[in-house]
Length: 175
Image (cartoon, rainbow, N blue to C red; front, side, top):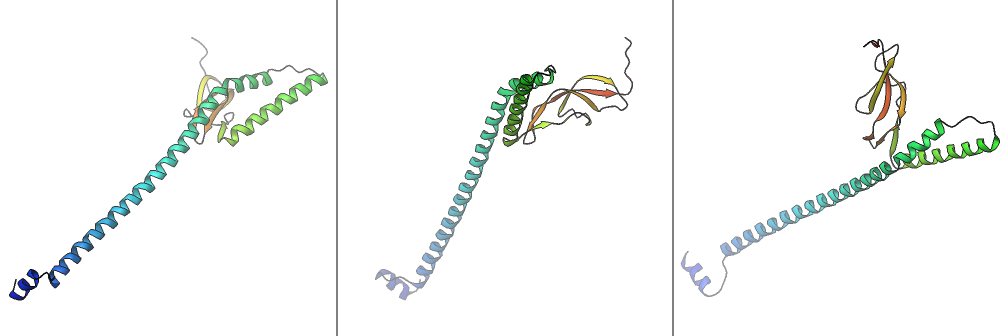
């Protein structure tokens, strides 16, 4: 330091160099604060997105858990409708029409939940969505020819595979 700076410092005056140093430190502190704020803002946005995803996952899990609980009831209703006797009585036909209506309401409700039935008959066997219970003679290998139990998907995720019979060109029936 020269004499003028020493006398200015000792008398309480601030030099240009000190002001520049303080300004430089203040700018650095401001930049650090801005960077910290931006990180905090990004962290908050990531937290919000994560919580939204967790909430959506929880809703999907709830749908899945609830649907799995009513699957046996739905299966029983479908089996009752498939194996219902053909009786020409008008009252019986009204009862059967009522069951058909209930089945359609259930189908609409599960569709609204994002649950879809796996269409199997006539499609190629896919071990990811079908469970083969038996093979039957057919003209082509690997086609689903019968469906024993409906399979379901929830937004692309398998809830239950469709239980099916698949065709096989030549089946060895001898043991």
